[in-house]
Image 1 (cartoon, rainbow, N blue to C red):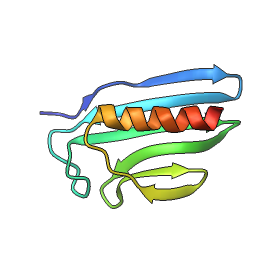
Image 2 (image 1 turned 135 degrees about the vertical axis):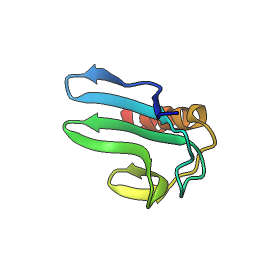
Image 3 (image 1 turned 60 degrees about the horizontal axis):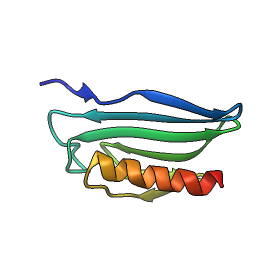
Image 4 (image 1 turned 180 degrees about the horizontal axis):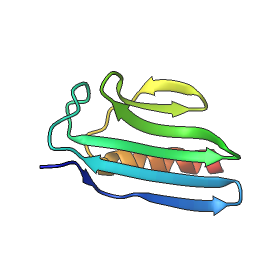
Length: 93
């Protein structure tokens, strides 16, 4: 079984803002994360990534808000998307 791309989208909010969502379902769990999801969710404003949720083999699940990286655990892609959406809405207010 190969990695399965679930979605690849870029939504432009205005001339200076867009969000990008790229989640994958992997055939085996990501070692540090313990789940079979690979993700990259970004909010970019005026050319700067102000919010990013992703994971990798060394750091596991984490999110960056305003340049500060913190661990971030999620149980499903739905939960990750909901948390990203809530963070994004707060930042756009």
